[in-house]
Structure formats: C-alpha cells, structure tokens
Amino acid sequence: MVIRTKIVATIGPACGEPAQVGALAQAGCDVFRINFSHGTDEERLAYLQAVRQAEADLGAPLAIMADLCGPKIRVGTITGGSVLLAEGQQVAIQRAAIEGQADRVSVTLEELIDAAAAGDAVLMDDGRIQLEVVDPSPADEIVCRVVRGGVLASGKGVNLPHTKLKLSSLTDKDRRDVAWIAEQGEFDYVAMSFVRTASDLQTLRKALAEAGCAVQIVAKIEKPEALDNLQDILEAADALMVARGDLGVEMDLPEVPVAQKRISRLCQAAGKPCIIATQMLESMTHGETPTRAEVSDVANAVLDHADAVMLSGETAVGKNPAAAVRMMNGIVASIQAFHDETYTPTAITHAAARQEAALAAAVREIVAVEAVEAVAVFTISGRTALMFAKNRLPVPILALTPREETLRRMCLYYGCEPALVPTVEHTREILALAGRLAVQRGIAKVGSKIVVISGRPIGKPGATNTLAIHTVG
Image 1 (cartoon, helix red, strand yellow):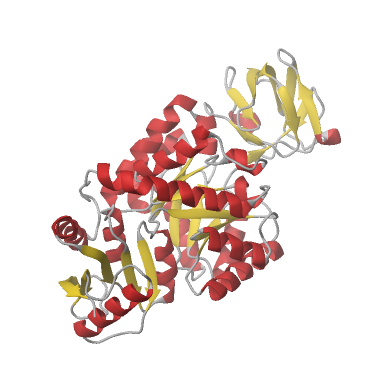
Image 2: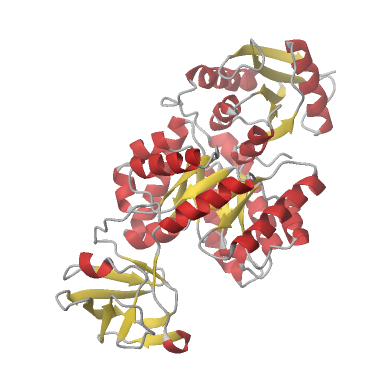
C-alpha cells in the first residue's frame, strides 16, 4: 500500500544519529525538519549528513526543510532556572537583561517595553502563564499583573497577541542562517516563522537569491495578521504550514480549527502544499501511545486535505521518535480509504499551472471509469506532479524527473512516489520507463493500465500536453 499523506519529522537530540535518522525514514518520514531555533551549526551539519546517509542507505529520496527562528521572543535567564509566579502578584518586565526573580524578569526583545500598552496581554510558556500590563509608564520597564500563574522557566516563549510590534520577520540571525543554508546546498525547503505579509516572504526570497539559493519557501501561519493577508501570502509562498503552536497562543484556541480548515482549503484551490503541525501526537513525547483525541486530530488533518502532517518535539526530544513516526504513518494509512470514499474534488482555480491542473482533473475522471492502477508523470520542475497531487487522486502518482532537486522537493507532494530517471527524447521511452518502474515499486502489474503524462518537446518545463493510457509490459 502506498501511503499518500507525507510525514515531516523534526530532527533533534533524540534522533540525530545516522542510525536513528535511518529508523525514522524506514518508519515513514518523507521530510526532515531542522529547527534553527535550537542547536549549533555543527549540530545542524551533522543532521544534514545523517539524512543524506539515510537517503543513500534507503535508496529513496528524502527532503530537508530548514525552519528559521524568526523574531521569537523569549524570557531571559532566571535565577535557579525557574520561578513561581503567583496569581494576582505584580511582576516587572525590564529592558536590560538580568537574572530574573519572582518580581522582575527580562525578555529577549527590548522593543516590547516601548510597544506594550495598558491592558495588553503578555502570554508566556505557550500561554500557560498570562500577564496583563497595568503600568507601561516607568522608564525602561512595564509593570504587569499575573492573571494566570505558574512556574516560569528560562527561555520560555513570549507572545503579545494584542500588541503591534514593528519587527522584520527576517531577523539578523535568520540572515546569517540563510547564508549558511545556501553554503550547504542540501536543503529543499526553508520555512519562515511569524510571517505577517507577502512582503516578508519577498524579503526572504531576495535574501536566498542573493546567497545563490533556489530552495522553496514555506510560510508558517502563526499570527492573526497572517490570516488577514492569507491570499497574498499564499501567492508569494511555495507552501503553507498551519503552525498551531504560536497560532493557538496569538488567537482564541476555539478559532484555530477553523483557521486550519480555511488555510488547507485555500491551499487546495491554489495548488500549493499544506502542512499541518504542532502537538499532533504530543503524548508520545513522553509516553508510549497517543491519546484518542490526537489520533483523531491526525486523521482529521488528512480529511482537511493536508498534504503533510508534522511531528516536532515527538521526534526531536521524544522518548521513542521512530515509534511516533510509525504511529502517524499508521493513522494516515488507516484514514486513506475513507478519504477516497468521501472526497469531493476541489477545482484548482488559482494555480499558475492551469493546463497541468486541467489535465489532472481529466485524469481523475479517467481513473473513476477505467481500471487504472497508477499515474506516471514526467516532470522537470515538479509543477505537473504537484497539480496531480493537489487533485488527490485515489491511486499512486509515480513522479519521474531527471533533476535531483525536483526529486527531493516532490517528497512533500501528496501521493507522489518520486523517481530519478535519465533524460529521454521520445514519448515511447517515457512509457517504457513508467511501466518498468511501476512494476518494480509494486504499484502496478504487468498487463495492468497506467496513465502516463508528459510533454512535447520533452524536457521543456511548462510543456505538459500529452496523456496516454498505457498497458504495462
């Protein structure tokens, strides 16, 4: 069985050794995420090398995604590592970095002191602790009241859902990381954190181009402002991620599922990949099994038309990373047949590749009436394969390409089985290649039918115009 929903897993201390990365790939991981909020360049280089070693051992492509830190605000150092903030007490947040105490802490963003206004909420530790600004007037600090208390540890995240901060989504650290990413030449995607407008993505794309890097950009949707500018962001990005962690802190939690469905629906219409992320199997960070609610969450992400689902702490620091990937793989496999039975085709109305999208819609009709076991797509840029992926075909898509960068990029595409093939000159060569590979991979049998999509002239991006129903063998 070909499992069509892709899995993104985060590499970290719990799974960074080559054997561990290989185990995650064997368990079903398609894309490895490296989080630039943590670790050193040396550690990240080791992760890169481990993924490429796993790829060679597996004999199948694996994609790598860099996740930039962005303007994430964190609590400064606290004496003893943590402190209890009691409900009703007052605590000052000051501009200068200090070792925090119960009545006074600092944060990593000095501009917070200037931007906060009376009544603004200051959320810490993923919203578990809530402060309210009661006096923003003292010089170089703001005074807050603890609305919801708890133990605050050094380095915990800080969110200000009601405060407009005039910050670039691409920080100086991000620019240094972009230069390092370009230098390695091994990344397939770069995810941008805290995107607010399309101009944020344009800034990143320019920085990547100046560094000589042509990776694709994933816009992480984790701020209400991004939801207000979603269509423009979608046009400027290559893919979107529903980053439910910070999004669930920045807006009311009951609104997050609605945002998830809205984002995935827009991605479907635009013909772009959608990744759904954060706390999908959170219980498996420390336990052996997920909750029933987490299993349903993953399954519903498939029904929401996610192209990929993502694991974060579950693999980066979890008790059993490979078990978490196997569990997620099992869930998306289990829901696949129900998805196919209940899926209503969604027209791809806003994609640039309209001819390819129209061909994909036609092939869906052919698959509905013919006994077709697979669809093979010859693609140079991957664009044709993506249009077929977004049509959520109920059969595997064998995505053939002579370009290694396209091969790895397609690891994120729903239903795609990427395969590296030599450059060909004639359609008959593509038919023979497609039939042979479909049999080798167990997605078709000799004598069965497959649909083969290619273009003339062969090898020219954007020239997809040929459809053949081919009997294998």
